[in-house]
Image 1 (cartoon, rainbow, N blue to C red):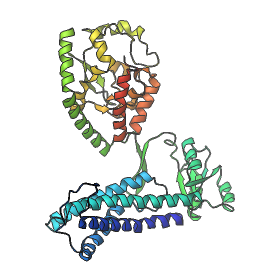
Image 2 (cartoon, rainbow, N blue to C red):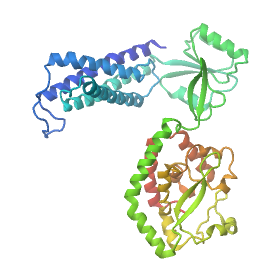
Image 3 (cartoon, rainbow, N blue to C red):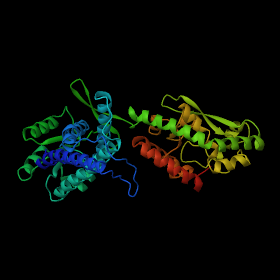
Image 4 (cartoon, one colour):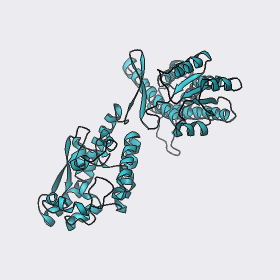
Length: 464
């Protein structure tokens, strides 16, 4: 660890303490003067329950500072590393501020069994802690980055191995100001020679092999010379996976999952799907009822078409609902039309101006209204609002092992591929975008895709 990393890491503690002190003091002063945060709007009554300033400092400010530092420590906000982003710092700061607010409310309500001095005072405290803390953190981070630009705290990195370092890792080492990449070497003797004239902070091995004496000698050299040693996983270095370090007892283990949608990610996405589908059903119910009535008058029953789609790696199927946009028994005529499919780049079956589509059905398809009933699939858990396209069993039979990776998550009504071109995309590009979504999933990405879906539908590009 660099000395500058330790200094800046420790500097965050008094900066946070000062930010909390200033926030609590400013909130007290504003409440004492009955000043609101909204200019020209007076909402507060005169404060009658505020303690004197000495009591406030001793009974609330001092414990409040230590309480915030405790939550910040639990969230790993004082780790002595320079390799963290500003967004990571700010995000954890907001979480710590929220936990601090909850702890204060719980302490006064459950332990002291009394109300806080002032609810508005408490709101101001939490708000100013977040604001002042963010200013302090960003200031420290900018100061640290300024030192890095001057070469202070930069980690000198050398890579070694029979195979060259992967492109993504090399790009980071070359362009990130936190690192100084010294190049790639092939043997331990070359590192020893370089070490005589150049300080080395990290040795990065590209082809570790525990059965090879070269790897063991390299690790032993790094330990004896107090150089950090790391290695790139030979199987996973070229692929973006969710890597994490686990332990089997005392034995460290490097593991990966194909998607962040494991554990809490899956829980959050399901909650998001439940709430989102319920809200959409309520909002869109007049449109759904109007389409049902129009379909009944225009082409009769049945109103809905149920398509069996593959939903997981075990090839279990789910009933995907759609408004019927084709003539009756359209599936029986599919075999005779396969030669007319314009999708020759993969196993998908699509026909331009499909003769089986009804006149009213073509209108529904143009604006993707035929897929609205799938909201009910989302509500019951068959699908997600966002995910890869649902897959037909006869299409899946021709998927490669690479293409079967899309079954890591539930199929979705819309997805990254749909907002990036819909049916205009070649099959390989569609799969690539689906896998990119699976490997980089976040709730923010889901929201972005849903927002982009509106414009994709209105543009009508790629709608079959």
